[in-house]
Length: 64
Image (cartoon, rainbow, N blue to C red; front, side, top):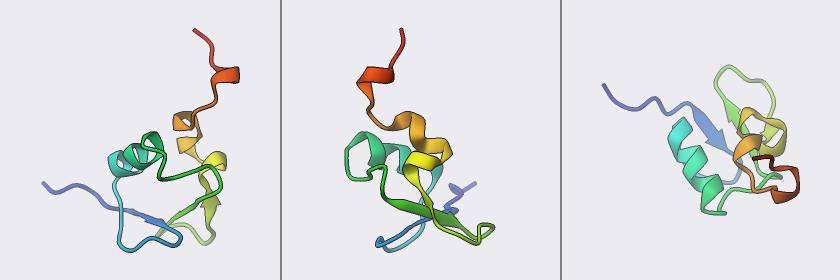
C-alpha cells in the first residue's frame, strides 16, 4: 500500500505524508509560520498551531 499523501504546504508543489512533514520540520525547511492544509480542511493552519508543533525546536520548553 502506498503512503497516504494528504497534506498540502502553502508555497510548495505536491502533496506530503505525515512522515515527510516531520522530516521537513526536523531539517529546518518547514517553520512554525508555514501553513498546512488537507482536502478536509477549509483553512490553512500554521505548523506552530498544528499537531506538528511538537516537532519544532523549542529548547526552552523541553522537559526531560
